[in-house]
Length: 197
Ligand code: GLN
Image 1 (cartoon, helix red, strand yellow):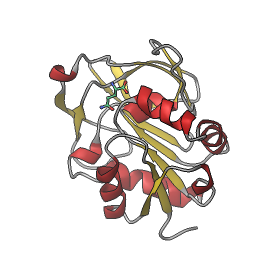
Image 2 (cartoon, helix red, strand yellow):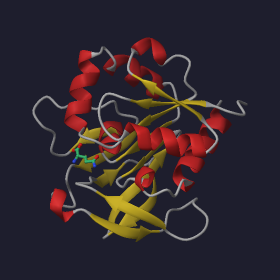
Image 3 (cartoon, rainbow, N blue to C red):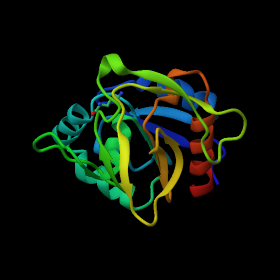
Image 4 (cartoon, rainbow, N blue to C red):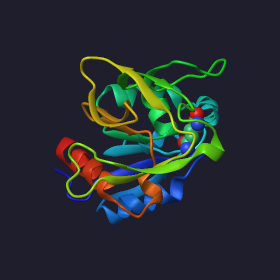
């Protein structure tokens, strides 16, 4: 069991520094990941918020798509926020032409489900497994989960739609805890990584 697990943040595009900070505060060693050979040594991986179409295009360009799919399918603990949630979905309801995901969670997501950039909002979201007050959820052109498979556990809903889910070692939220200074979700993920190591 790794006391200080090494957790990578996929650093192709998106809010990478905020995740590095939240992971470090949660007791992980955090590092950026851009190359396939950097995947092997990781105990866990974060897929940040950003633009899922850009991240998936860059991943293909860097030769990361298949290695990432393989590591996630093997059970590498992984946490995706917002765009990262989309990348973990086995299926996107409304993909851009050619948009691919890494998969890992048996769910269908709807991109930009809560509206456009200027309809971004914050909401108090109780999350199963996170002790204390509800999490302050920052939703920025956020996806929601349209439907889930039998193995996918819904950890939180907002407006009747799942916004936090888990399947095995894969965790995803529609919102961005890395932007709030509340590190409980990253702490929860780091525990999951420790348990899996
Ligand atoms: N709407 C973006 C996408 O489709 C996600 C936005 C975000 O990560 N804040 O990738």
